[in-house]
Length: 103
Image (tube, rainbow, N blue to C red; front, side, top):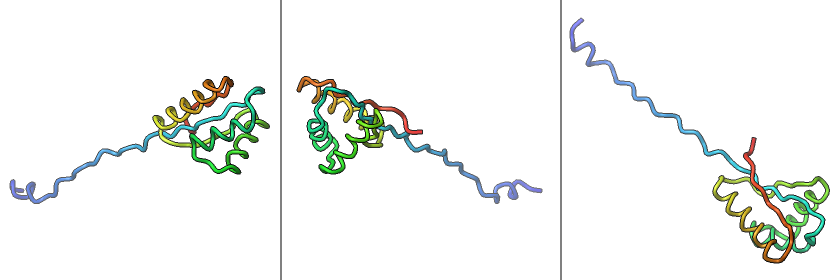
């Protein structure tokens, strides 16, 4: 075999496999003090939900203790949860939104 045989073989390029960023859930935590209408208003304002969807998410949290509001990228999830929780604090309510990784 000569050196030309080695040069005739195509070079294999490997592309690094990129993983998709992990998604996070924004969770609404039920409390006994925040009025239902206020929770729906926050869901509409921060998460751009319709009245009906906001009501269903709020009732799910009311019945089960927590409810998934939205699933998105980590930075978006954290900023939305913080914004919604701050609206509750400003109004004097213990409204709480948390984030957790999606499984």
